[in-house]
Image (cartoon, rainbow, N blue to C red; front, side):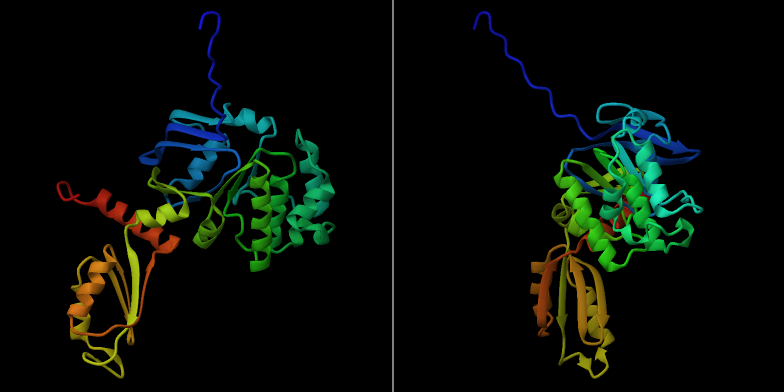
Length: 326
């Protein structure tokens, strides 16, 4: 129509954006062409075996190191700019805490330095450390130190919270309270990114799971999608009768079980058999063909930890296979 123009609203700014990012240390490529986007309001788990590039990725995100190539943006700006503006809070494993001050004094300092500070009392309460506020920092337990680090990371109105192994040393009650607080932060529109070795936490907490392997993004999706990506299911059952005795399953029958189709793992403990299969229906069908009768048969999807192991082991086998055999 004459005299009228059509405009398109710009896309919402990502909380974090990596575009073909690479970082090397000598001959080691810690981050290898990494591309990803994190959105406001998401709780994202960053998983990977040791040496996968998790710490290097967080260092790049926090402006502690610069990428060799590619671009890293935090709310559309350079990481250091976003941090200076008070948009990012971080809780890292490395780095000590000031020991000759009280918890309250340390938290007050963090609030005073933040461009958009919260009230000290609110920060202490949110981190669950009000009762130890007057204790010297060097007199804290490991779990208490973690909660103080969390308080420092949330001393102001951040839009992104980055956590590296945040619940290490915390007891079960403290961990539950911590994640309830993190969920509140995400519900208020903040992005939460955490690296963890507690895969049950990632399964229960994360809206999205990123799996790194040798600096590359191997999988990206919900916990359910990551489990499905593994392409395997768990089968468990008990065997009694032919081929078994009081001590368990005879070696000959174990060999026949090992030959079941689509089997990826086999574990025999007494009369109980646990397997993983890429086609559970076909495996169970072949099991009956062995002339045995499985009792208490259970078929279920892999847990996140099992799926994580299956995905990373498959990638490790692929990348280390001799030329022509990948």
